[in-house]
Structure formats: structure tokens, C-alpha cells
Length: 545
Image (cartoon, rainbow, N blue to C red):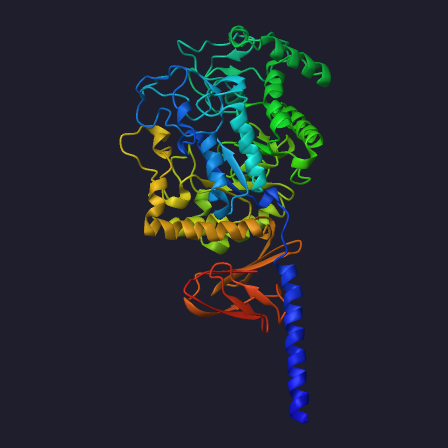
């Protein structure tokens, strides 16, 4: 009888534990809402990622022989869409995509001592109201947004408001009440960084002008030839009447840029050359973009992903997280977070990444939850215009992924970070070496597959757990190195540089005894006993939830 009683008691206890484990697992694994501060962003040069529509490879008679990696190579919006459909970004844990500008670029090439260079990068705008035929049609752009949203991926549109494209034989300079062509910026103080041209032959839009202007003659001629002058001017009239804004160069551009939000429902901007434009221009752009986003949501309730506001990410070249809220021009400091921006690209991460994990994580946690509370930074290890990345020779792909994807803040993967795409291309000049075509063929290489798998596991874990990017960081033990992150109900524990095989992990107070948790890296599960779990895996990392 006594044995029967013990047996019954054990059965009841096991059932209770399993029930308790199941209920707790529901809490632990509960799907978390998207949070911009914890996003995993993938950035690619549109022309260099994937060719999804070979029929659009040559347009506008762009047939001159370009210097190496300075011409169009066929990548397009259709190619990005195809890779979304294939699940490439889902596998990588990407929940936001930023691609280089796809608006109509100058038609001719330039030669500033580097050989013929076309506007494959997208930063030499000719017409803010149309897409470049090399990149996409309206329908292809619309399909990209819709496909991304179906996969839970937000879209950041790269916008340029500082300058037009260079002047060429085919691309005329705009009138003097629209642009300045000198002096070139010297960056000695605020004035010599803002009221100037970035480089020679890159006309600077007079975004500081309060004088009303007529449309540039070159645009009028172009629109009439394309049969859309009346429609464009009708829309401009309606915009200025609705907003009450003056017809200044800045406000024309704001109208043209926010049209893409209002019509297609893009989720945010990555804004180019922030420090070269007056702060008030960014306030005005932010205000109109947020209004346009709400208008799109109201008109398309079935397509709305969530209640997130429009997102503004700024490229403030040289800004680092140590500056906290400010960029120092020398004669004055400016807080761009109070001028429309939710986030700034952190040009400092590549240097901080030289430090050990805890030094990086605790530092970023401290700043983001104090001086930058309510805002964030976007970290990267390589980019399209940074000639001194964290791992230029691609010798540390695992460390790069671990530090980038587990650091507090937004993570930005530059296309090919995850596949060891080379950043050193012989025969190139300047930043062209950073801009080779995506090395899709390398994915079949066994070693690259292992590297990609590491990026995928970390990326998926990050995507599932906003605690990683936005949560509070706490070191549990220094050796072995184990830490926790907590954001609202989302809790994770991560261990790095652990012994392979059997390893005991202290969990701090993250998880209650008796529940079963999963190591997302190995797929192994374990029950919490005395605040610890034991994981037997071949890896030196655990991602516990």
C-alpha cells in the first residue's frame, strides 16, 4: 500500500511539473512584439545584391565602359523581393531591410580621376518623383513592400535631401535659387559643414532658403516630355494648400519624399548626410513623414503591421555613442535626437568591437538606458563607405556576428557580412572595393555554410527576443561568461566562450526552477534545477529562453 501511495504521488508530481513547465514555457516562448530599438537590419546596395529582372539592366544609354565596380551590375528591387520570398531574410532573422536609393539617378557618368562612374549606388538623384528604370517600376516597388510586410519585415527607404546628382553633359545643374555649387565643405565648424557642397560638382540643395521658388526648368522639360507635368503640378498645389508650407526647395523635396510613405506604406527612412542639412529641415521632414504614415495606415487598415510610428534613422557621419545625444562641430554641439531622429548610425562600434564582450555590452547598456533612454543607435561592422571596418580581411566572421548581433542597440548587417564577401578587390579605387556583387555562389562552400549558419542562429534569436537589443543587460558570471537580458516579459540568458560538451550554466534569477528551457543554438532542452541548467552540446555558445 505504501509503495502504491508513493507511485501515485510520483505520477501526480511529474504531471504537475510538466503542467507547470508547459505554462511557464508559454510565458518564456511567447511571441514578442517588434521593437525598433532591437531590430536586426539588413543593408544592401540595390544594384549589387541580386538581379531579379535582367530586362532592366541597361537604361538611359548608360553604355560607357566604367572603371572597376563603378558601373551598374544588374541588381534590382525585384531581386530583393525574390530573396524575401525564398526566405533568405527569415533564415537570417532579419526584421527590417534598408536598401540604397532607387529613385531616378543622373543618366550620364562622371570621371573625377577614378574612371567613368555611374550612379549605381543611388545617391546622385536626378528626379525625386520617379524610380530609376535600372532599379524598379512602381509595381515592383509596391510588390517589395507588400512581400516584406507579409514576412514581418519593415522597410527603411534611403533618402537624400542634401544634394542633387553631379552635373554632366546629360544632367543639367538646377537654378541658383535651388542649389549652390560652391564653396566645398571644409568641416572646420558648423557653417563649413552645412552651407557648402560635400565635394566638387555635387550641387547642394538650398534647404535653408526661405524664398519661394518655381520648379527647376530641367524638371519641367522632363515631366512634359514624359506626359506627367500637369499631374505633378496638380499634386504639388494640393500639398502646399493642405500643409500651408511655403514653396521652398526644402518643402518641395519633403513633398516628393513623403509621397512614398503615403502611397506605399514604407516604415521609415534612413536619412543620408544628416549633418550637412539644417536641423529644422529634419524636423519638417519627420513631421510630414509621420503624418503620411498615419494617412497610409488609415487608408490601408488591412495591411497595417502594428501601431509603431514612422521611424527615422540618421547617417550622421562620424557620430559615435560616446557622444551620447550630441554631435560636435567644433564651434557648437547639436542634438539630432531632438530634431526628428529616433536613431543614429553608430560609427564607433567598429572600434568598441575590439574590446571583450562584457566591456562592449555593459557600456552600451549603460548609455542606452540612461543618456539615450527612449532612443538608440545602430551598430555595424562594415558598410558601403567605411574603408576601415572591424574585420576588413574577413578573418573573424564568427566573432563579428556574435559581437554585432548580441550588442545592445540595433544591428545592421551589410550584405555579405554573413557570407565572407571580400572587402578587398584588386583593381578598384576608393570605396568601390567595399561594393562588389553579393557572393551567392559562396554559400555552397562548406565553411561559408558554417559561418552563415552561425549568423542565422544569432539573427533568429535576436529577432525572436527584443530583450537582446532593447533589454537590460546583467552579467551573471565572468568565467564562464554568462549574461542575461530582460525587456518587459522577454527574458534570455546567453553564454559565450563556454567549454564544448557538458556545461553547467547559472541563470541568475531569470527562470524558475522546474521549467524546461531551450538552447536555441544547439536545439537542446534542459530543466532548471537550483537556478542552473546543464547543456550537452558541441558548441561553445548557448542561447537560452
